[in-house]
Amino acid sequence: MTGTPRFDLLVRGGLVVDGTGRPARPADVGVSGGRLTVLPRDSSPGSASGSASGSVSRSVADAAEVLDARGRVVSPGFVDVHTHSDGVALLGPPGGGDGSGGVSGGDSGRELVRASVLQGVTTEICGNCGSSLFPALPERLAAMRAETRITFGGDVGAYADFAGFAAAHGRVPRANNLASLVGHGTLRAGVLGPVDRPARPAELRAMCALLDASLAQGAAGLSTGLIYTPGSYAGTAEVVALAEVAARHGKPYVTHLRDEMSRVEEALEEAIEISRRSGAALHVSHHKTAGRYAWGRTERTLPRLAELRAGGMDVTCDVYPYTAGSTALAAMLPPWANDGGLRALTARLGDPAQRDRMRRAIAEGVPGWENTVGNGGWDRISVACAPRHPRAEGATIADLAAAAGADPLDVAADLLVAEDGEVTIISHSMIEDDVRRVLAAPYAMIGSDGVPKPGGRPHPRWAGTFPRVLGRYVRELGLLGLEEAVHKMTGMAAARFGLTGRGVIRDGAHADLVVFDPAEVADLATFTEPLLPPAGVGAVVVGGAVVVRDGEETGARPGRVLAL
Image (cartoon, rainbow, N blue to C red; front, side, top):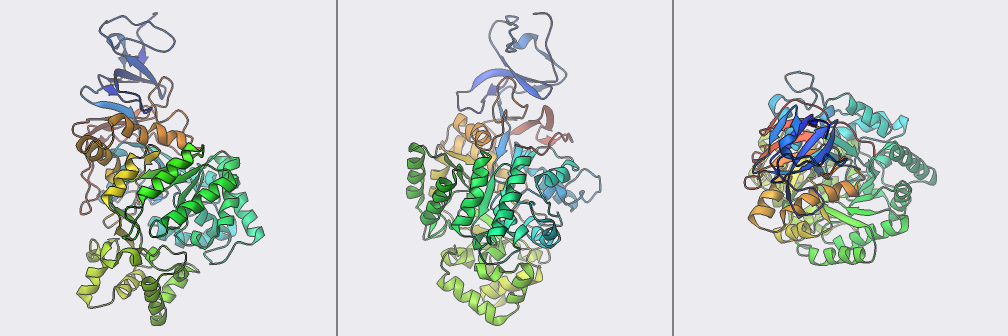
């Protein structure tokens, strides 16, 4: 060996869980030029071989910076495969105006931006559930701004293609990386507008062309949210045509099923049909069987997925470790209520006859509609964010109605009108047994489904998902082994979404790392205090730069938008 190796960073003394599912092993990890070198430790100081693989004894390795990982696990950076963080960094500088990027609102805004990286996430995948900030025909961009404000919590704009989206984010320093799917609902709004009708042939061709261009520029795949308007207005054939474009690019079809409640099995079969007819790999978002009429049906949906995989089909899913979900209050209304967009919805909500029609639809159901309230009840729907009505936050719609002596639908309608549609809710719709079954499935990876909109009480999953899996489901319950859980959070996720060189610790891989204490790691975020950072996550490294040290951000901003 000709000299002592010099690293930019050395993570020394830890137990490496490398993201592949293989057993943990003691090793040091060196970082140079944003890439990793694994340094196996042994009992023979100075016995380094000096081989091209970079195998160097710990005693002779040197670095500009050293992280002490003794007693801790060193893993690849976590990949959050399901977020709605598309616009949070674009909402302007924090209240202090320091120009670092992030949502407005002072300390609460900064907490929202940093929550993901503090729990160890080094790459977020946004554009899920059919909603992305791109693409659209140029003449539709201005009209889409109001709709993106509702979805993403502020004036974040809309972009013609992935390149425009990436350029906007490139102007805002960020701690971790971001990749984006192309949302089918956004495609529809960007070509047809928010209207309830089939796409005409020329419109479908325009949607396919927009999708093709964004995928060629580096978008990660196609997503649908078939319970949400305007995506819910599309038939199966339309989605097949778009998924064929994704298949030509070798990128997955990622779907929030048309129904996750009483018709979940039928909705899953539609997704399977779309995958088979298009040739695209299938990824089922936040797989669940929610609402009292579907509890326990993971005992049928999971064997179906396992059967398909055994038969050679490329199908996976993701899951978050909570029994509550979160979405927009407007999604609790029948699809026809949203036909025409926000202005049309507001007009209907102001019409007593239309309200009565919505009430009947919830009570009786509408063919093809998931009907969350009908499957659960207003007592399971709590207000997460209503900026002009903060006293409503944390209360259920049923409780608000009882206090006002009013009908729950009227309370929900009045709130939507007063807030210009910007109301987020939390739906307590699942049972723990179903969550555990999906978490344990060998083809299920982890996604937060975080909705980081400013204000209110967002779902704690945005700050707690990954530590919750490691603390509750690995250490406390033993549902998963440590190596298995890390694989679901890293290597499995990276492979599904084409994150080459990420999600693993091996020589030459991207230097995205998390150092955590397996005895202490835990989520602290609650529904009352949803942005509390976790315990036990000591350090996070992105692109070779330490972005979190001793549980606190360092101010380093090496993150970027990934073109895949």
